[in-house]
Length: 281
Length: 259
Image (cartoon, rainbow over all chains, first blue to last red; front, side):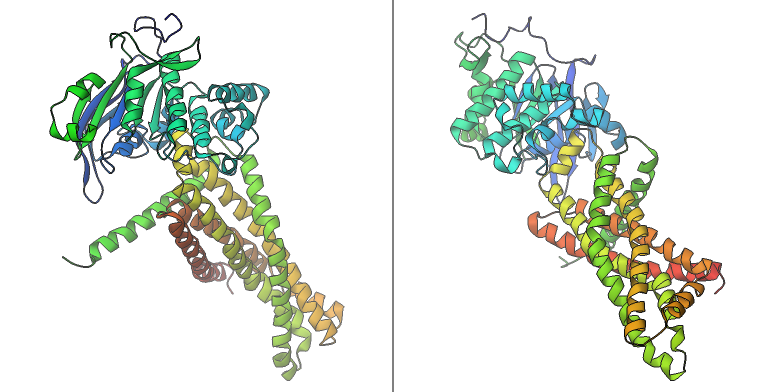
């Protein structure tokens, strides 16, 4: 068991900020033509993964965009890595966003750039060109997602699953303190979905990165809550110690603009809420 | 329940003007800030400048040629055929060169910018850029605005020269004018105010073309249909704005140079 992800006291989250919370939402409200989020509050501690669940249109993606400052809430406070972003100017947000990785629902790779240029995008912004050091880091990130052979390909030449993996490589290349995953397995076949989930679990257990993950696939959510990454076998394995091990994975369910559940997988399964029971069935 | 609300429509229009003004303003103030994207600017200059060269040359040449052809019959009635060079020169340099170049580049590049940025917008590439800490107004808009302003300046000069050449070809081959007479009258007709007007307008037109193209691209929504709509709107708005601003710039400069 020694090669498995380290237990709580040994695990070293990537956080460098002093705040104990990676992301905090306090009474956040946002409406478009009608209210979407109505006063939601939650906190994501450093090193924890929070899985956002709920029906389509309940504002899951919106939560990620608000956390990244891509949208501003109508009311409430959002604190990310110790900084309140609600009133922050766009120019100041750019610096903060460099500490956060985001994997978009449809990958959002730059279609006119190669895989290498996509993954290196953030680093090339700092140096202005593709250096040998950046090339090395790109290969390392692509190796993490097992796609180092695709460096010279364009996104249009990749399958849907490969594009998601490249998007993950692009998000992790700078080892961000927080990663936001927006339906990373949406529309993929079960085998590819498992590969993506394994990568997310690997990132969680090896680097201790805090993350918010939006998914509609129950299977993926429970796989994350019941598996950890074995570095010796270099694969994800089920936890067999009867749920004693803390996998730093919590669930958060949205409904009608409100959070109706927050807790562990076990709590979710024990819930007597009729809606949750129906959702899980 | 009303089918449409005039208040909402007015609000949307005001918001659109506000968003455009902010984007246009930022595209200029970004020039003085960091980071600066020289490579992207050069790439855009190549696409806008060199890429538009064939259509600008063709338009300029035939405009000058048709101008000489159309005016020759009138001038001949007054025995002033020798003034063809002067007429072509003043018309091309002060008005037709910059405006036609602007309209041609608007058709080619405003639409190109709107469709390129619009596609990036609807596929979340703009959000991805922002998410990675890169300012799209600095990375995408400012290089296009700078490149358009600089390249339209040079394209207009080329258009003027080619237009004059077109007028010369007609004057020499069809009207039998003396080449020396054509070029001398064409050259001597131009005053500082004419040249200034001819070189000032394309800079404004370049700004309009690029800022409008980028604005419609970045505000595209509704998938591929939305991108198509943004492209059409960009060309229409840029063309109309070029003609409207042309009137005001001309009036202003005529006042300054006391025509």
